[in-house]
Structures are given as structure tokens and as C-alpha cells.
Amino acid sequence: MPDPRISRLARNLARFSLDVRPGENVLLDFRGGATQDLLKEMITEVTEAGGVPFPIVSEDSWHRRFLNAAGEDQIRGWGGLHETLMKQMQCYVRVNGTSNPFDLSDVPEDARAWEREHFMNKVHLKLRVPNTKWVVLRYPTDSMSQQAMMSREAFEDLYFQVCTLDYERFSRAMDPLKALMEKTDQIRLTAKDTDVTFSIKDIGVVKCDGKMNIPDGEVFTAPVKDSVNGVVTYNAGSLYGGTSWDWIRLTFDSGKIVKIEGSNDVAKLEEIFGTDAGAKFIGEFSFGLNPHLHTAIKDTLFDEKIYGSFHTALGQCYDSADNGNQSAIHWDLVCIQTEAYGGGEVYFDGECVRRDGHWLHPDLRDVLSIDALTADEERVPAAVG
Image (cartoon, rainbow, N blue to C red; front, side):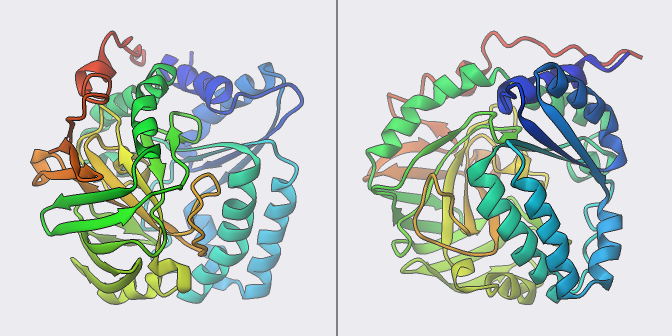
């Protein structure tokens, strides 16, 4: 008998996140052997919804073999095959359950650059994101629980709690923040070693409510490209391309990164932000709102949703919040403003609307408080056995 939590997650993904319709092609991109139980349930749910599932199973360790040996023509051809396949898809789900987040750490930089251009940029950022119904999530593994410094059982409980929220209700709670951001011009963010200002005037504002990422819970926009001035210290840490940082500090002048600092390997940061002209500009700005996430684990899909955080993505913007920035990268970096991380404030047009992670604005404090977001939650049944 399948774990009822996995069955519920699969149903939520197929029926709510993807809203699979009869006749739609659904690409199931599953990475890591630990994901097989969820893959089985997804095949059933997609088929019962009338869709046509196309499962692909891979491992980072396999992909490492390819990237370490391939030339640009081979990576271009590989990306082209994925591009052809993606053009036939109406829905896409990626579940990443690889056992070692550092499997790709020794891939040569030229191979990484070719993959970014011929696969991530052409297939995902340019094709999949604007043209399909998609959702991306991680799957609990020993390595994830180790990153979170939690037991496997405790981490699984947290995972299923945050991944099976009542996202329809959560979505409604985000409406006042979306409306307020749409009326806002200037934003100022302060925290330890952070003081930055920028404009979001006339840029789209989008709720992330379980349709594209699981776990979810954010409202995002983008800064006017050349309006960012100041310093941001991203205190959640980050793992990118097999390299880990405990903190990263960026200084901006007229939108562009002019100084790069980090806990380690600053040369690697300079290489990443030197990918192309757009890699030195912000393409996304967002508030994290998930009431069950409070501690950074260096996993972007979790950390960017931490309650009381904000994050920016260096590089490519989204069409739905288009500030004109173009890049082959899109790297989310998180700053947590709760008391546990040193506190901080958010100002909309000079008014403090959030302090130390808690919303103060009268339109927000009652609907986006942790108590309001978790009231009357249904407990997810635990695994049997």
C-alpha cells in the first residue's frame, strides 16, 4: 500500500498544480531513485485525469558522466532533443531526489556554460516556463535531511506538511499583498549588513501558490532594472553548481553588481556573475510566506519560501514580471529577516510594512500572520509501517 502522503501529494500535483486536462501531454522529469514511488502515483493520477504521461528518469551522477566527456556540439544536440520534446508538452513536473547535491561539482565550466545556453536557457527559461503548466519540487532524501540537520523521519514530516498545504486558501491570503505591491513604487530593505532600495513601479506582481513550485508561498515582482542601489547580504547561504556558500554579499549601483563578497570562493561568484551582461542585474524580487518554513537548509525551493524572508534572482526575469533583464542564469539568493537571523525591515514608499519577519500593515497582519495561515489545518496522515 502506498504511503498516503505520497498519494495525496501526487493528486495535488496532477489536479491542482498542473490541472491536467484530457489529452494533455505531461512530461514527468524525475531525478533520483528515491522518487520512484511518487513517479508511480503521478503516472496513475495523470492518466486518470485524462493526460498522457511521459516519464524520464535520470541521476546527477549519470549526467556528470555526459557533461565531463561531451563537447559543445553534443550538448547542443542533447538540448535540441529536449527542445523538440518540450514543444509537444502542455504540462511539466520535475522532481529532484538525487542522493548527492555535489555530484556535479567537478563538471568543467565550459560544459556548464554550454548546458546553460543549450538546455536551461533554450528549453526551460525560453520554452517551458512561458508555454507550459509546470511545477518543480524536491523529494526528501538522506542528503536533504542532513543539509537540514534533521532526522530523516522529522524531515519527511516537515516536507509533507509544507508540500500538502491548502494552497487554494493560501492563495487567497496572498491577495492583499499582491494588491499593495501593485500600488507601490519604492521598496527599501534593511537587515544586518543590508540596506538597499529600488523601484517596482509598473512591473507585474505574481502570486506563487502551489502552481509552479512545491513547497510554495511567495509573491514576486522585479525591480526596475537600473533602480537597485545599496548592499544586500544573503544570509541563508546557497548551493550552486556544486559549490556551497554560507553567505553572499552584493553591492549594487544603478542596478548592476559592483562588488562581490562571500564566505568563500569569491572567484567562483565572479565567474557566475560574469556569465553574461544580465547576470549582474536582478531579474526577480520576492517575499517568502510559507508559515512552516523558518530555517535555511541551502535548498532554494525551500529557502526562498521561508516565512519572513525575501529573495532576489540574479539574471533572467520572468515574462510575467518583465523588467527587461536577459541572462542564461537565474540564481535565487535569500535574506531572512526574522529575529533568529538578526531581524530586518521592509518599507513600501517610506512606510514600514514588515519588521523582523512579521507583517505590520493593517491589510496584511491579520491574513498573513503565521496563526492565520495555519488555522484549522488538516493534519497529513503519516506513513504506515
